[in-house]
Length: 209
Image (cartoon, rainbow, N blue to C red):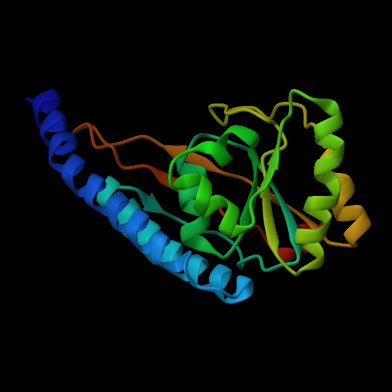
């Protein structure tokens, strides 16, 4: 019975998830028509903040934030649990990201990422990694908060993998603070809920490094 109830909940959420994603795609397309870059980015941040919060509710994700919000310019270094990290971050505060180069070619998502000012990097090519530093530095100098996953892969959150530290050089050059961000998730209840509880989304500013 528990398994059947769990499957029913997942099936009931699917149409709503698809609907929210379609709304994000359509709203994002309209925002992309804004000619001024800064206005376009502000409008995109506002739209994504509202719609991703709706998406989290539809997915049954319960979000818990600890500590004050982080504002740019700042390089935010976080562990990486999965795709929900990005959704949760966008729903929490206006930020952009360092993402793998392949994201640029994704339908809709790629265009939104470019408009959002995402810094793309091909981690497999060391020369490309070095070329990314000036782009990241520019984003920081523009006063933006940039989320970086320095482990370069996802984990279960139990341990922290060695950081690939080359991109931290951008914060040094821009004179921007680096903030640690710890992401953790807890699974559902005994009834098989898919709810996830995120904690430590923001840390106190006195943890600046």
